[in-house]
Image (cartoon, rainbow, N blue to C red; front, side, top):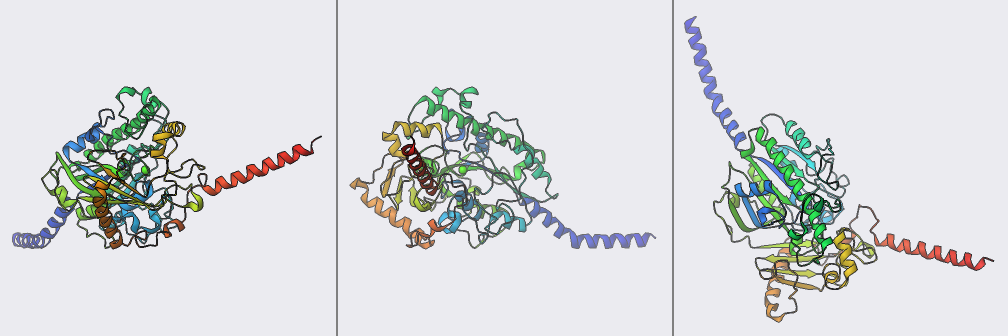
Length: 518
Ligand SMILES: [Ca+2]
């Protein structure tokens, strides 16, 4: 009996010796693979948090993540509008490489691989709360779910500080997403706030205690009380989303996994004000970016390397031990994150090329406003391909690529300098010295002192665009204007023409009727 027991023990030890190392290493690698929590605001300006120096937009949760993690001072989207930027994030491709998904409110083809699918295949739990890729049509592109992941948007709430804020119960939905995960699986979740996208509750900023005297007005907006109030209403929405970040991180903390969760906080583009959202200007495509991951990176750092929205997908894949997809052109941020340095870490990260094609409609034939631009530490060089077109949309259709707002109405009523800046036509070339003109409002394109630098930057930009097969740089740019716009047609130029015809017909009928009257 005793011998038989000893033999059994020996056998058990042998089996354990064979199995244990495998089981142990599997457990270790599962532990090492971090969670990823990707938090993206909708239309949040890069300057508008305490972490980035704002004294009047209060964001304690973003600020804390920045203190404990890495804050990037030169992060950019490749196209400053909702769906084009989000397609870039998901695919790791530049906007000019995404065919129809380069356009706002278009079709997103599933011929392009997205990181949530690749991570799901690699054993990650994926999911989406709030706004993922959009607006646009992903079903026509062959997807059965939002490309940002399966949706967890079941819960709504009326508990919000202003009526412009989404009723999405982000916290409860996030909790449901967290609980849906199979035990032991790492997650890669997308939390997409609808804030601070318009509309806002008018004067909610003042109602909630903002002082108009504290508001910083950028140089491209007129410094008037109604503009300050509009900015204060925007700030309230930023602050509400910041509060949600605090609550969501508490939920992750309760699972014991917060330290091994890579928390990424960013925005799709700048604030929804004239000269910014949808425009190839500094505040339009410059975005905030904070990454917190205590288990993996040294915190308290400020990094000046140029990083792009294309870099997220290869970064998340590398964190999961997955090779970047062959379609991806972005470069993983892992080496920069793992570095213990501040300042410029990778000397090659010193420029970004950004672009736009069609955003909102409002020009004849649904034409877009094609632009390519290159941004370096010192300069922004902009090439507008059709300076005869209206950059913000035609006046007849009310400058549709600038969201309706009190600030926009004020600028339209004022005319002059601010109108020309935000809504007027632009020359074929723009050139800004951002080190002396941080918002980029003084166009130096005519100054011969910068002629050589402009040519050099233009050549550098077009070399990259040609190498990446941008149809606009290869002489086939008209293709972008043939892509279908799937949004409503209220802002369409054709809708305006039809209205004029109806008005004319009604006027003719009235005058005819008037003539026949006794
Ligand atoms: Ca947006």
